[in-house]
Length: 299
Image (tube, rainbow, N blue to C red):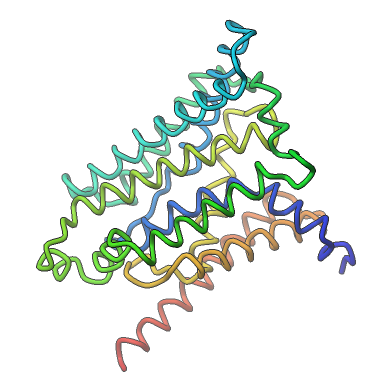
């Protein structure tokens, strides 16, 4: 319908505008593959809260130390952001692994906690003021290194971790059959804790791309992050029952969601219509996956 949709400029624009969805979805892949009906509903607001605190931290450091190296300030902001994400991930992982709380319940509670902290920390106002180098990173040398290259490199690295390392194979085995994993000497509890910890850390990394992409960070920025990430992983065929799927499949799911979001923007659809589209896509995909899994087990 629009001849500019498949232009090189729009493709680069999609990768740069939705880079934080790519990073956040990586953590969800590990959570889904670990099984136990794993899901992280907190990832959206944890990303938002991490972005708020890290941006405020960078702003305070810039104001208090005008001569401080801006790249050091950005590094400290990244450490703060990842630490917050890791704390939420650790909370979720311990609750699931040690106290056997359903992932849906504990991550929903964490989502509400992160959402409340966003508004308490900001008093409802937008937070801004990070180093200019952070926004310049996204247009460095004119090829969007910050927003495009870094997410792709991280994605490839985690694809290797999932498919070629002992840890990746342990996650998949845990998701396919937790009892067999235990008999093989794998600590299932440890795997659950690590995958939720990873989800939190990647939420923290994704948070740094928000001020990079849009400058200021609103307290409700996390409200619109969860559904596209979940939809991307689901469309990629990553089974929530665990043990089936890989990062390449998730990559196709992410690309599909990015195209869908961009297409609806091109056609002038608002956020409510976009949320409706995500819901339809998730319901259809999960129904199809359920049918495929039943057919596979029959054979």
